[in-house]
Image (cartoon, rainbow over the protein chains, first blue to last red):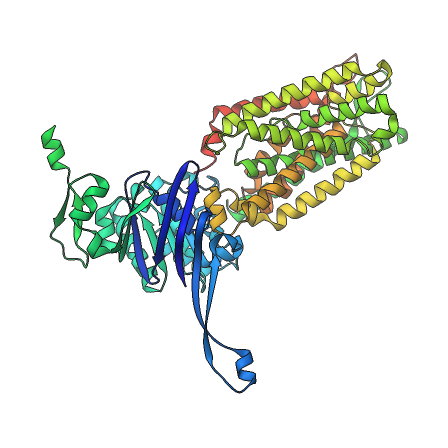
Length: 279
Length: 332
């Protein structure tokens, strides 16, 4: 199952994103980058089915191998590929929750809830699953805080709680994990854990979509990159092609430089030193 | 909240309810107007039971309305009185009386419950409309401000209508407008109130997890599978009907609907599958206790209206919540 946008125009208040044509690969991490106000959060909210496509379509494209019952009855057993498209906004919320999980930029929870309660809410519309909740807390490193009140946590820890909730929400049907700017409140240790968790989810077949301003993080986790500027797609493609100074410089209006690096992707970072020297 | 602490909370709540019922049942006034604390005489027993039932139902309804409004708006300062629902009901009921005075009493045949519900719903609608920020988000403090103004205007409207009424119809409405716990409750209103309370408790416990999930940000609630618009509609309708039923029964009572939910959560924790029932019990306890307390007042000129007791006890509570920055500390 893949998430696709087909000449989709998405309106968020006065901001208009699109028209957009995109396809998010399964078993891959897609990182969305772009200047502030470029449309990252709008795209992610539309991907999570929280904003409707004003024009065009945002849908889940599904290819299933199914044995056609009628064909069998006339002794022609054949496996037929059935294509089903589900418009994101048409899916009932409870069903949508089994297909995708979403972590917003600024998660909020009731301060009086315990961490465990807050994580358990991820399964509110499906069968409770205590082991999965426990596993989600362990993977995000908050198992020791399970009985702590959310109100007593730091911002970074609250972000872990929200991410743990998204992990606890996963079912066998889950195909998408959407995370909006997770690195803004995080220390390097949690950023590292998060990167590992996102890669792990992708290796299990999910389409992972992450928005970030952190190019070191993007270089570490991305398979694909979508660069948004002023509500349009400025560049899209494989990470090793897009993470290059000649593509990123015009989008951000900042000089970029390649850094020697051992990971799969090139590390392409914005430069600050020349601006500081000039002033 | 540990299981042990929660058990203790339930025991505490039940004890307070029983104590307040006992207190209200035993307290009364003798012929000289002095308060007495004794088993009631056979002719006053019926009155005391009637007052107990009225207070039990109205208190529970107000407190349930309060917890639903607090969940809906994610705002610990919300309550039917603060957001103007009670005054809205009052104004519409007064209006219904006025129309009945002109067009004949048959217009009031459905009882006060229908105009009260219309009033509560419209007041909540106006409060929400003006309390909403420009970005669509709701700022907790502007919402409360907007509610207080809506309430003030509605109460003024009610007074204006009362003033327009023919003289012989005024006393019935005037006593009710100050808030009173009727010793002989209107049966149809009491039954509707009881049904609303039962449905409120049942739905609150059954959808406890959904109500818990409404505590997350709107996007998160929606993404974990909550039909946010639908749940909000139910909460708006439910809290309005409950506030209207309580107001039709006992008049506009301040702050019971604010303190009840807070008392419940501090006893049994914030999860709704517990807090909803606890809020109903707390509300009943508070109103019954307030009704008992007013008998002790040295009022040589008659008894203290219960609305006064509620406002005197509840006003400071609201100010303390405000001072502690509860609205900001609620969400994290």
